[in-house]
Image 1 (cartoon, rainbow, N blue to C red):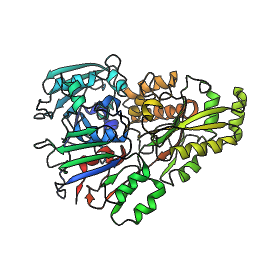
Image 2: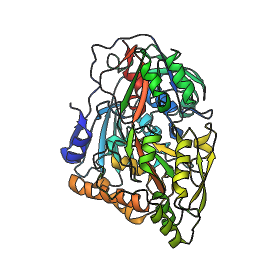
Image 3: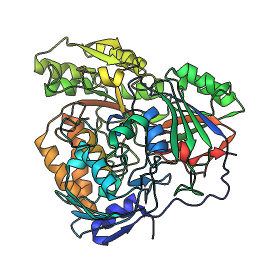
Image 4: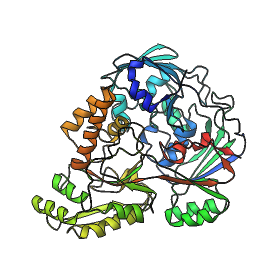
Length: 514
C-alpha cells in the first residue's frame, strides 16, 4: 500500500482504479508522557461535540484532532492517508467508491466501529433541518451501501476525483450508530483521547486511550488540557510565563517579545488561509455588482499585509484558492487599490457617497478590527463611508457571521479546489457566507469535479477564480500564514502541516515532549 499525494490523486484520478492509504510513519525519536497544556483562541460558550457546528480552532482541535476520527486524513506532508478507512478504490468514472474500514477499532464507550457508524454519521449532515457546513459534500452522495461490517460503497451523483479528500473534512466525524445524541453530549469518539471534562468556552481535559490503532505512530501525551484564551495578549503571556506549552494565532504585535524568550519557538507555514470581508449579496446595497466591485477597489491590500500581518502573508485577489492549492491562478488580473475607479463604479450604480456598516471582532482573525479601520480609512478616498461596528468575540460566529450584512471573517482554505468551492461557494451551501449565485460558476463547479484531465480542470478552476474575483460577494485582501508558537520543551517530526493552523489542527496527536 502506498501514500497517495493530492497531486498524484488528481493526476491519475479514478483511472488508477485502486487508491490505497497507509498509516502514519513510525517516529523513533518520539517519546510518550506528560500533560500538554494548550492555550487556544476560537472558543465559545456555545461549543459542543457536534461536528456539524464546528467553525473555529478550539473545537476543531479538540474534536477532529483528538477525540474523534474521520474516514481519511491529510498528513503533515500533504499526503492523503487512511484514518478509519484502511483503503479505497474507484470506478473509472470516479462515481463509485469502495472503502474498506479499519477493523478492531472501538469507540470510547466500548462499541465496535463499523459500516453502520459511517452511514449514520454521514447521514446526519443531510437530515431535515441540518445546517451542517458539510451538507454539500454529503448531499453529493446518492447512495451509501453497506457491503459488510467493514466495507461500504459510495455512489455519487457525478464523478469526483477528490472524493477521498472530502472525507477528511473536520465536520465529518464518526459517531456510534444509534448513540449519536449521547456521543455528542459526552464526546464519545474513536480518537486517541477521551473526554474527562468539558466546560464550553473555558476548558477541556482529555486523557490518552490505551490500545489504540495509532499506538506507536501518534498520540504521545498522557493528558491534554485545552484552555480557552481568546484574548491575544493573555494568550501570548500565558506561553511566555510557562502557564501553557503552546498557543495558536501569534499576536504579531508581541512577536518580538516571543522571539526574545529563549523558552519559546515560533513556527510559521504558508497555507491557504485567507482573511475576508463577506457581503450578503441578497441585501442592498451588496446586491449591486458595481457596489461589490467598487468595494474591492476601495481597499489597500498591500497596506493590510504590511500593517495587519506584518509581512506574514501575501496579497489576495478576492477568490478563495490559495498559493498552496494545485490550481492556484496566480496570473489573474489583480483587483488593485483604485479610489477613482471605485468612485466611478459607485456613480454608475447611482450610489455616490455610499455609507455601510462593517462588523468586526478579534474572533474573526487577529487584527480584524484594525483591518476594518484601515479599510475605513482607504475607502474614504473613494467616497465610501464605512462605519466599523466592533462586535463581542463570544458568539461572533453564531450572532454576526452569516447574519450581519457585512462582516470580517476568515477561512483556513482546503486541500483541493472543489473542497473549498463546495464548502463556501456552492449554491445553497450552509456556509456560503455571501449567498452569491452565479450560473456559470455553478456549472463549472459540477464539470470540474468530474473532470479527470488535469489541464482541463486547471482551465475550469482558473475561470471560477476569475468569476469570484470579478463578480463574487467577498472582499479577500490577503492570504495569511499560520503563525503559532510553542515551548522549546516540545518536539515534532520536522514536517508541520499547513492544511489548518497548529499543524493541520493535529498538534495534539503529532507532537511530544522532547
